[in-house]
Length: 130
Picture: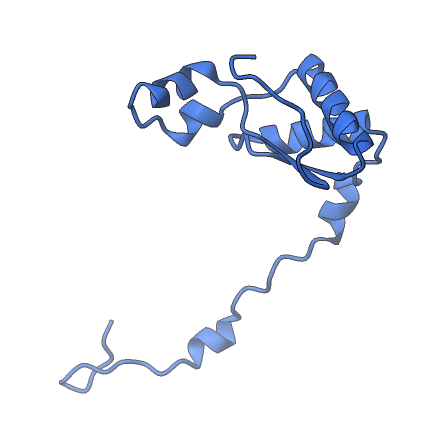
């Protein structure tokens, strides 16, 4: 990796906030540029990288603490893909996405009758204003 990872627990809670390893974007920031989010965080961790990070999480947990992992490589669906793969590596059962989609109820849209019952603005001439 281009930045060192020092997996040392300094408290009983460890947080791994994973921004991705898009070296070009991060180096641009270090040179004083202001790269976009896409330039910095557009990164999909490989299975080998996730294996190493899972081992790091286990090491930190073994030090007697809780470990929280946040994938902040927030372009496209990368954090979701990496997070689900990571849960599998840790022996956790990922949620059934199809079941979640089926259970999701979007918020109701305003009904046509509610929209029609709104007071209407009138112009100075007394006709309805648009």
